[in-house]
Image 1 (cartoon, rainbow, N blue to C red):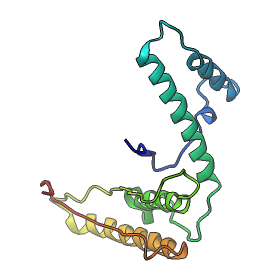
Image 2 (image 1 turned 135 degrees about the vertical axis):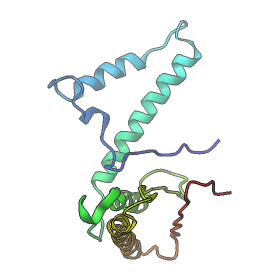
Image 3 (image 1 turned 30 degrees about the vertical axis):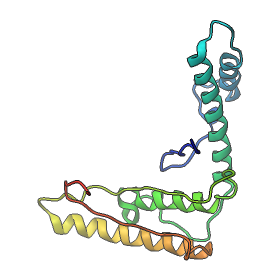
Length: 173
């Protein structure tokens, strides 16, 4: 069976109870409400309900744990902020990947290999190719160089492989 994949937004993880779901109410109000819903099961709950509730609670706890780990993780390299040097959010994605690599020991038992995926779209240009490529390629170059500088700072240059691919509307097979 194995370990389930961690899927997260580029902005990183947010603890579930940090979100203000209840229009100004204190943050912990949602947690107690949801814990009460998922705490009890009875003969009428059914297998699906029990599995769903347990999975919900497990993912909630995992999300909160990962959010805390990432908040406490510093990097040696300064990644660019969104803007001209982070076109398409590629630097933000690579920064998150660098943080995840840096926290590989804290993220859980049994992680001996990670695979990360990020993307930077918008290269399918049929006009203004020079302008589009002139905007995107320097950002991509800067993001990958910054990422690799961080990997070297972590002492992992011999343990990390970066694969970059491009396709033009065709399958990669």
